[in-house]
Length: 120
Image (tube, rainbow, N blue to C red; front, side):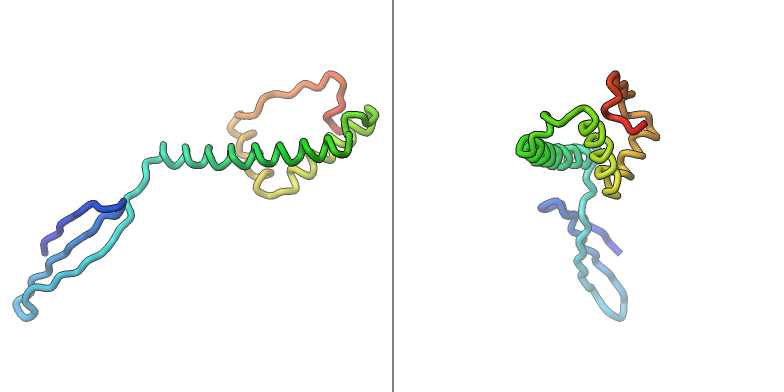
């Protein structure tokens, strides 16, 4: 059995020549995707997350401006911040990824001097 690899359009093409006395020569072709380096994979992930983070922030900021949340009283701002955090963690993907980041110690430590951004 002879194997020959050809690289074309990010696919490795394999040409396998099988020799058998009763069959003669038979050619088989198969395709296998070339694995992307981890660095490239994570660059793409960062680009995807960045694109959606910008869009999400813009949409939420527009809603906050439309509802004039900056003019709300301090007690309501505190409730808003707590409810916002709860809405965030109710989304399974954010909760799981946030927990992973916290477990790795990647989140900044928070200090809230006016306690407006925390529940208790």
